[in-house]
Image 1 (cartoon, rainbow, N blue to C red):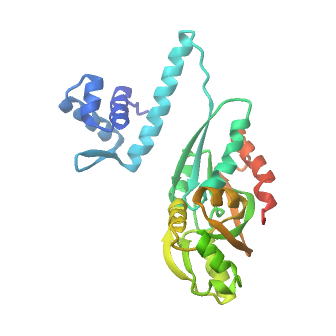
Image 2: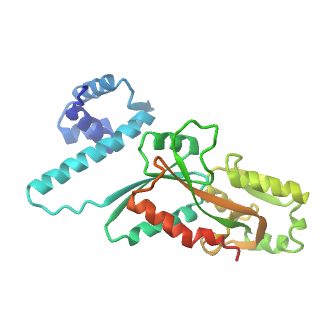
Image 3: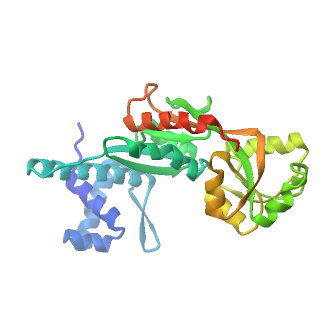
Length: 303
């Protein structure tokens, strides 16, 4: 059995937490050459590089990010153990690590996750956001309890996991008030040649929008494509074009970004999935999310 040197791990953890070798040296009361040597020993034992140097800044590698998460958990448990032994109260919350595919709207993710705070026991949510394929890899390593996505696991992906349909919602089009008023008239024919802000092609919503445009004989003027939905909405707020959004969050979108709804797109539905490593869900917070989704998304708001 290979044993981990926890002193080396702690040195790494402090460097990553402080974001600077100099500040870590001050906290640990070590010289920089000594601390650098300890970090190299840990990297050699793991066979992986934990930091990249960008200019004068240390940046965690992908393996380094994973190591830092484990280190945080290890030293948090150590502190809790010390507190329990010394008779101090320990209110360790239930931890829920959620992966959120970047194409899932932030407001939809919040609607799905907020139910966990109604549980009788305290819950700590840790949210990771990123590309769907990368998060699937984290799920396979059991680094995530659940992954929220706009699609089930593709049949071409060789990762063991189970897709649970949470529900679906309608899709609406939004724009700044001036643009919305202009294109609301004679909808949807008015959209031919209209300026559009759309998700990138890796989003299921983009593919469904393209199919709808084709069926309706509409050729939009795509002025921007975005992986990040919040950036897309910010451009729309500045009057740069029309964007699609979830009908279930229409009021929140309009209020937050000062835009108006043009109309619903009745032929398009957005689906959202919870992907887990196990077929049978046991985590109480994940069960709460799935139960909440039954009461919200499955209604498929079209108002």
